[in-house]
Amino acid sequence: MTLVSNLRELAPLNLVCELFHTKRSSYYARCQSAQETDVDRLVLRAVVKEEHRMRRGSAGSRSIVSMLAKDGIQIGRFKVRRLMKEAKIVSKQPGTHKYKTALDERLEIPNTLDREFNVIHPK
Image (cartoon, rainbow, N blue to C red; front, side):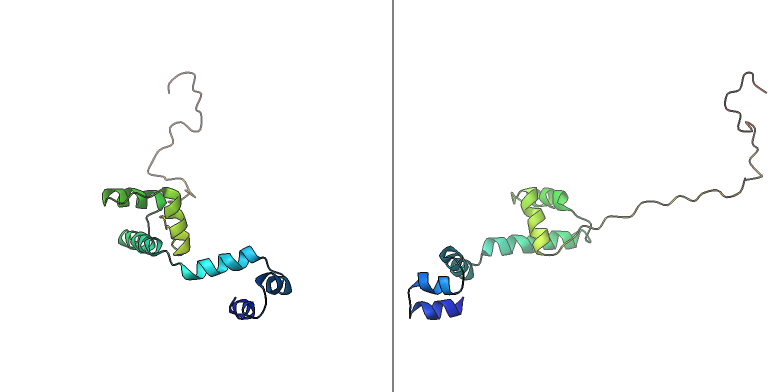
């Protein structure tokens, strides 16, 4: 965009933008975004990152929202989710429990039903 800004001094912006096949609105949007740094968003991102770190990486967007509400910071869940995505934070949750499958029958436990679950009379 600095090239367009430099050429803008020599020719009208319409002509310069047409030369580079860009729209004037894109040029103005780029100039506007380059000037503004959203300090509040950076502070919120740091707070979200710290809360996530304090919970050893297991906190998701919903739990971070409730933690920030306790601190007096009102913020929505989806904004926290976007801030987490910007900071490249992912909630890690414990894995599922893996049950062992029995491969052989336990001899010390008697098999009294002998797989007859519809018993007519007791043995």
